[in-house]
Image 1 (cartoon, one colour):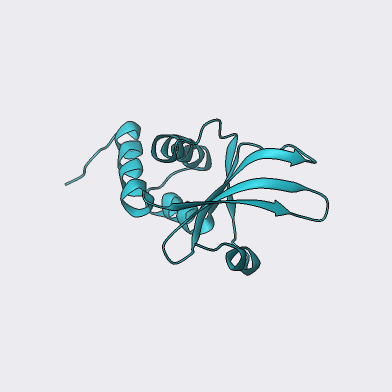
Image 2 (image 1 turned 60 degrees about the vertical axis):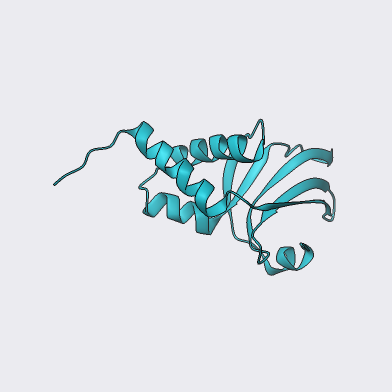
Length: 125
């Protein structure tokens, strides 16, 4: 039997899945320094310190990256392969989910990232 679901139904299923899997992340706020810039960043991490996503809260100096959401490639790949979502659909569902679940407003554009080990080492619960 073939089951047909609408885009809206799939969108709602994805939101529910994200909430069930990643709905209770711990936010950790840090001011990060690079060689020429500082950023106020909130990391959203699992109990085992895995960073699921991070959000740049405000520009402190340098280029304005405020509103950028960086999501782990693990989550992005699941949305792409298991839920058959396109790039723009993933961005939209992540905007809605982070707004509804974590009250993050004004996300410019969700991006995929690979978490470097030095970032994980800096994040402490």
